[in-house]
Length: 221
Image (tube, rainbow, N blue to C red; front, side, top):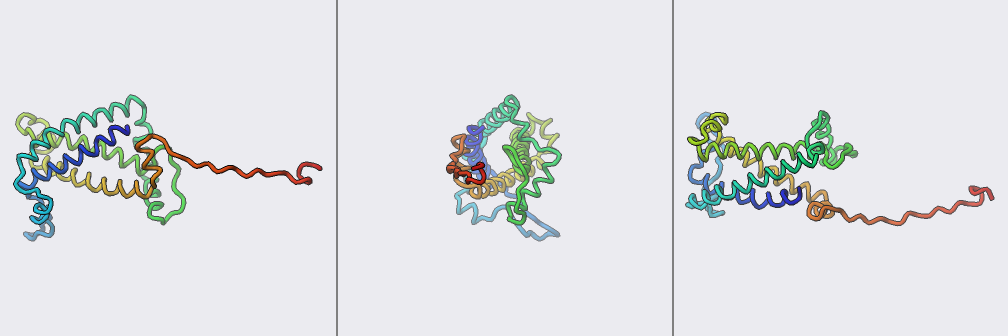
């Protein structure tokens, strides 16, 4: 699970970067109401700063190559989760959504006590399951806009080419937000927690317990 976690990080980074090179050629998405544009993804200065402009063919080459690694890595992760039985600790439970709110209050230092957890707390169960669903959604919508004729059925299931592209774009924005929140949570959890994600174990400093010597009155003397 750690391997697929770390392999997915550079792959997804390349996918987002190459996706931006592709999106530059037709950046139509914005928040517009009654003919007035309030927000546009993304201003020209953004493209110029990150050198995204005029690199469409390069973006397509990287995107269509690394999507196979992204898919393969995701398949390995899901299969291992199912075969090993780890899905029992990963999938949300009925009480997870209620406890996730308590986890949020604890992270915001509004609530002192954190709800009990096993390997993952309720918020992590929801977030990690959601990211798996998002990965599957990215593959489906990506195929729909990559080959809309050859995968006409998938494109139709996605609501057509234009809706599939909107969903694909929205999922990418979701990855960015998830990544930022994930990094903040890792920092708050501390270095030992981060080290355990790499090595698979934590280092615990056990302090010697004080030895209590009974007094004469306590030992019957």
